[in-house]
Image (cartoon, rainbow, N blue to C red; front, side):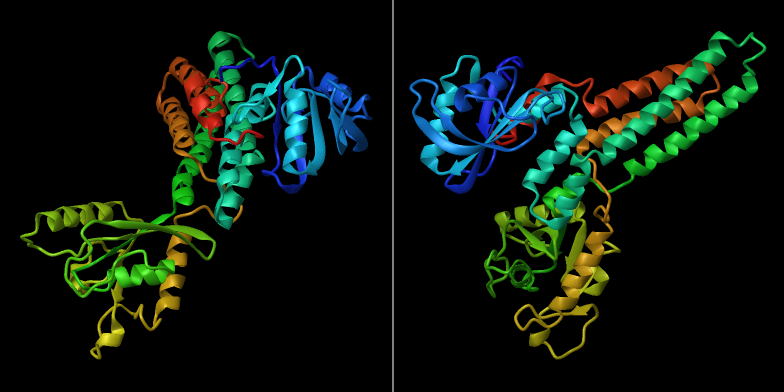
Amino acid sequence: MSKGQDDSIFALSSGAPPAGIAVIRISGPRARSALEALARRIPTPRTASLALLKDPRDGSPLDRALLLWLPGPATVTGEDMVELHCHGGRAIVAAVEDALAAMPGLRRAQAGEFTRRAFAHGRMDLNAVEGLSDLLSAETQGQRRAALLMAEGHFSRRINGWRNELLTLSAMAEAALDFSDEDDVPDDAIEARIGQGIAALAQDVGAILAAPSAERLRDGVRVVLAGPPNAGKSTLLNALVGRDAAIVSDIAGTTRDRIEVPAAIGGTAFLFTDTAGLRDETSDAIEAIGIDRAHAALEAADIILWLGEADALPRADAILIAAQSDRSEAARPGLSLSARTGEGMAILIETLLSSAATLLPGEGDYALHARQRQEVGQLCAHLDAAASTGDLLVAAEELRLCRRAIDALTGQAGTEDMLDRLFSGFCIGK
């Protein structure tokens, strides 16, 4: 952020006009004076009030709007705030914003600046900010539920519990080290309690680390369709995503490169990948590259739909599909399926949803991003080191490093460039 935190900012925080209502937010030390300049009065705090807004420059009427005066620090940003609930026409929004921009000390907000101020003033920690970012981009119900839990601070409250336990354990360790020669500090007993506390905390942190990742929830469960040429992979892909995403042909080797198609099924995000037909030899250099990429996709797959022979399963947990059942009278092992007639498609979708449920956060669970998982991993490593050492002095140092990992996790010890990237992904009104 190139602008200062002492500036007062404004932005349209509702959807783009035209709309029924347009909500314009103002935050900062000049929010009150801006409201007084527009409405000629300050309404009762946190009580909606109707007023005719006038341009301070010439007194011309702008709009009749609802006003909300929200004194800080008990606001979203931790600063004085104003909300103007205007009519949602383009001309009205433009006129009110133009009047605000002309006021001294007021400027248009940058992307994510309201949320960044909330973070800077302690109204949100970094985990809640990341949850809000996910919530704004959620496209499935699973994504929405997990993001809402993170945005509302469920994970942050768990972290605070970890922090409090670490402070208690650190205080006990320091007491044992500093007063070990005093009669009222029993060394053996206190060291045993410290060890038990570290072990219990490590178990709780490890359980979070073992939970499903947010990347899989956000990007979709990776489902790879694989098998020999002309096995029906592209036809099945099109049936699953509900459109002609892949070219279907009887000519072997039509699919040269892998084709990735995102789709939401039953409220779950999937990323389906159609791959080149697998065979041992080919004289086509381009097809050979496609086969190599197909093998790479198989290695990265969460779920594999195998349309080949049963004895050639690429992985033990691959789902065997007896595709093109409408073309063959002979029974084959696997799920009998025809993408053309729809036979077996309902069972396949049910199987996919059941498999995906084991890979994604459950109802009421949140998911950690790569950054969060890295910091939780650091915390877990320091706890393990503290638990495994027999030296109380070393254990005390590891507990201090645990607290530093907690600070990095909540954003109290973060880097500006990382924060810039995170907040720049928000819309202007957030």
